[in-house]
Image 1 (cartoon, helix red, strand yellow):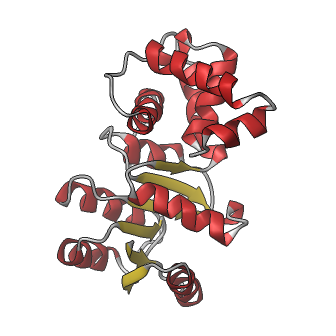
Image 2 (tube, one colour):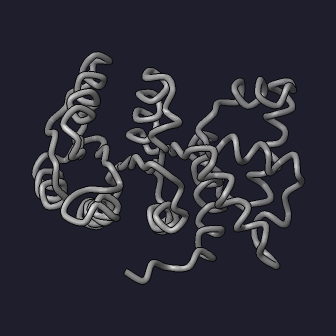
Image 3 (cartoon, helix red, strand yellow):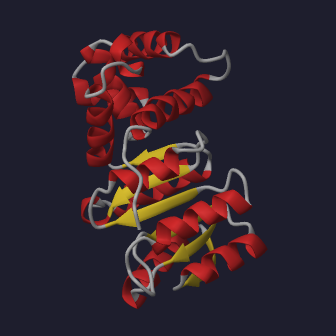
Length: 226
């Protein structure tokens, strides 16, 4: 995997670079500013752009804006953003195009380096990696609506969907819910059917299911005014 890292904190930038290299991945560039993200990204075409939400000069949303610009310039570009806290609007914007290859993780919740690298690999492969708190807030937003895709799902199916969104495997979902993998498979089959997704490989349909529901929920998040 070829990775472009954007982080203004030198210690964290170097740490992320070493972490990726230690796991056998190539860091094609490690930059500090939004302009460099788009410029180097377009030139290098990395498998994954790993960005901090807050970058110079204002340290507000430059990282997200650069991620969106990069995905606009390179359709399908995988991006994973790191943040100190949940901002539903940022997550909603990243999910808005309905394509995979997107992640939103909270820095303080990244407890295990190897799990973080696996999340990066999953996003680079076209999947999703969303922090559980991000998932919870977006799904709660969807549940507060009068109608929506979540209405047809049972509470158990919503629980499975939330764990799918975090990027968990069937076995991981089963362990978390203390049920059998077979029960998880039945729930997932029901979810995919209720969401009326086209036939295709299950992994691809899982990503489509996650994006369809989260995009539906994110549509109700008010846009930023700045």
